Image (cartoon, rainbow over all chains, first blue to last red; front, side, top):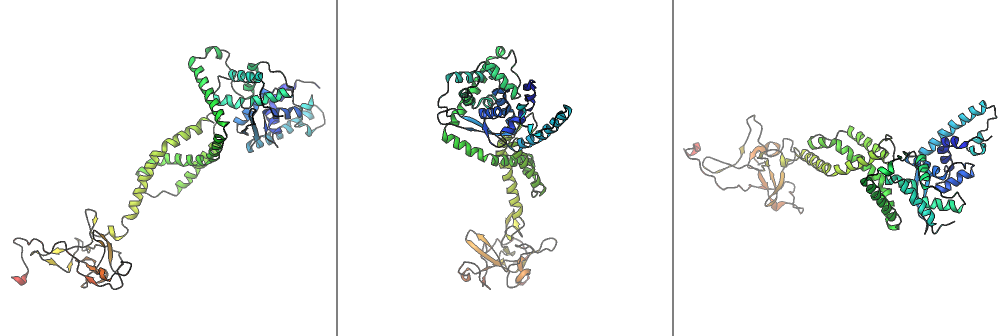
Length: 121
Length: 332
């Protein structure tokens, strides 16, 4: 199946970003790389950076700058309690929605697909 | 991989992106583009897409961040003032970045940041002080215990604001800043109000307690002894004094329990006791009171048990005889 997943992804980019930093803090491009590794490669890096900034402004993330010797400094983001709560809430919503859609489309329910949306294509 | 120097093309691109975001507040530009050079460099090293259009890139950043798109006419209609403001704020941001790159400043900023919660709590206290300043200036009462609950509430709200919580969407940034400015501005007036209040409390606590300010007073100054002179100007002894209601005019308070009263005069420590003619509690209105003989004070310079007494020294040996007054019957 080949649909334009870019539009679909835009709605869940927040959750995807929170999910890839759930266990480890990351800096901008590092997070882009993790998303790509998870199969999300339709989203431009600027969208990811903008999303990080928005999540930070909404109080879901912590952020700190790590200088590198000689090179440009990096801005790290980490998830906080509020971000975790939002991630959990969205994960539950997503599971319910995915189940509904799966039932609707008469396909077997596959909860493992929650975070691997990119594999759908 | 460690990037030691950045490709000039990336520097140019990042600068162009910042320029395209130029209509935003400097803080927003910083938030959006901090670490951009590092990210772009790494992406280039990974064989990422070529850097094409910085304006489109900036628009994508802006859209994803949920910031308003740049008005189509924004560029053309920038007044000189807004351009200057944007430049100023960018220069400020650059200076801030410069400071951040110096270890000593970074250490200082880290410490200040670690102390931030202390300020949040203090801000809550100060804001509570602001709402209670009128009460502090005018009330004689003790602080009601209920107000400690209010203090706690103010502190909690202020700390939550510091953490970016409990704030309406509109004013997420502004309200804590305004609160901080108000809190700083209230420090001096509040300090004055607290001083006024504590001074009054102090006066309250110490008035009515202790014989120094109880008993007989002359224009607010305690009287320690009374000397009465007869119509012939001679000093009288064993004079009993009462007020219009029959209350003894005593130099000590009604509940004074000690065998003597003491204090400090220009000559130093002294102690007075009722006369032998009316010893004990009933004798405090019989004048003049006798002085405890300092010769018999103990090593600590204080009266000893059953300290012998001597007559108190009167202010005058003799007063002016009264003209035409009836002198004592004996002399008649």
